[in-house]
Structures are given as structure tokens and as C-alpha cells.
Length: 150
Image (cartoon, rainbow, N blue to C red):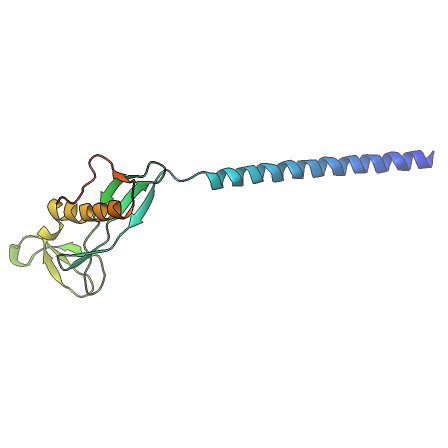
């Protein structure tokens, strides 16, 4: 009789351990499936930063691209940076009622506000897009994305 009870207790213990292990196995399989799905999922867009030297300033235009469609969906010139300090310029009030200027916070270099006019920023962004497209066969720019003409 004691042998039967001992066998029953051992069976119940083994059954409990099997349920615990089964739960852990299911959790591990779910984690593995989630990790595989995460690796297979590509981000819908990614950003590419470029470096340009234009108008005696540094520019870091950013292109937003969709790899799966081979499409440039956006281009932004960013803010101009000081060529000497590589610091982003800030808008500063001109002296004695003069119009606003761009100024380097580190070295104090000042530039007219026209350096960041829409035509200039479009030129910088368009040049970055055109150069990207020239280096990447089969890619195209979405509607409204600036391109360098000429």
C-alpha cells in the first residue's frame, strides 16, 4: 500500500513538473516567433543624413526613404551650420534695427537671413536627392520632393 501511495505521489509530482515545463516551452516558442517576426519586419521608412558644403556653410540634409518601394518620400535641408565650429546657426537680431541674421553660438560668425531662404534650402535638399538618385539605380523621388534641375 505504501508503495502505491509513493508511486501516486511521484506520478503527481512528475505531472506537475510536466505542466510547468510545457508552460515554459510555450512561452519560449511564443518569444521565438515574436523575435522572428520582428526581424522580418522592416521599418516603413528610414532616414539618411548627408553632408553638404554650400554658401560657405555646412548643411546636413536628411532624406526619408522607403526601401521596399525604392522611393525618396521627403527631403529637408536642415539648418545651416558654421563651417569653422560645425555648430548649428541660430537666428539673431541684427544690430541697430537691421534684419535678423544667422549667428554661430560658439564663434559669433554672422550671416544674412537670406542664407536659409526657401530657394536656398530647396537647392541644398534637391542636390542631396539628385545625388542620391544618381548613386542608387531604380530609385525615384516622390511628388513634391525637390530635385536639382539642370
